[in-house]
Amino acid sequence: MAYKNQNRIGLEFKYDATLIALVKELDDARWSSNLKLWHIAYTSKNVSRLEEVFKNKANLDMELINTSEPAIKPKIEKVLVELNEETLQKVEKFKFWMRSRRYSESTIVTYTDALKTFLKFYHTKAISEINNEDVIEFNNKYIIENKLSASFQNQVVNAIKLFFSKIENTKIEVELIHRPQRAKLLPNVLSKEEVKSILEAPINVKHKTMLSLIYACGLRRSELLNLKSEHIDSKRKLLVIKQSKGKKDRIVPISDKLIVLLRDYYKTYKPETWLFEGQNKGEKYSEQSLQSVLKQALEKCKITKPVTLHWLRHSYATHLLESGTDLRYIQELLGHNSSKTTEIYTHVSTKSLQNIKSPFDVL
Image (cartoon, rainbow, N blue to C red):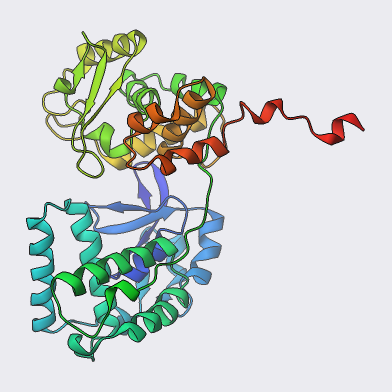
């Protein structure tokens, strides 16, 4: 199908957490609130992987791939498992409890969906009868057999522990529920030259300002999109980031160069509510559009790495470390709770590594 002048494959199915997790494994998966479907890049890789990824999980009508309305039709019996009224009421009670504790809406949605996935797996069993052995069986027969990620498994564990410790009294001993081993992945980092070419690629001043702010202040995508004009203190040269991850506020320094860029942007666009707005005044700039801005910049400067917006944040932290900034300050600037989270950048910093001589060089 054609979507915003791009060839995409539309993936049409009723809500199912398993299928959504699988879709996210494909290249450039996005949700369209207008079309009410997921869509992915129309690439030969994605076309060849569709049958592999959805084998035994969805019926694929591959003949539709080359038509104007390609779609995936999932197996009805896998999607239409319904929870009974009593269970749904307990799920609602769980949501109500999380909201009263001021969990973010995104966390509430994530935990609720994960819990429903688990409870649907045992929809024929009373909640009061679910035990730790059932959790292990779910991990093996649902998570692992469907090749779902460790991060999705961790979300389910979080939801189960919270639900069964706060809402439901059952045979489950929450302290005995184990988490999956996390892969120890290094952050992806760009060179300063690559960052410079990406930030200089956009002609549009709004696009240039958004990408520059993410790198110059080490922002998460949501932090950028939630900024308002009053969060910029140009006299003190500070940017205030409100209620970010973990509901924390923090401040980061902004340079004269960035202030000039922000003023040029503000004079041109005159935003009303959000610092960066969509086509309609007062409407927050969308995550998908921001991702598209980066994609266009990468194409223009001919960088073929699978760069995401978060790479700019990783690069900011690593470049600070390489320039001699103390790790404790970097922790504060990034808004990390633990110094251990920030220490991962010491593994990708090349400052010390470049001084090491390989024994090969002196043979």
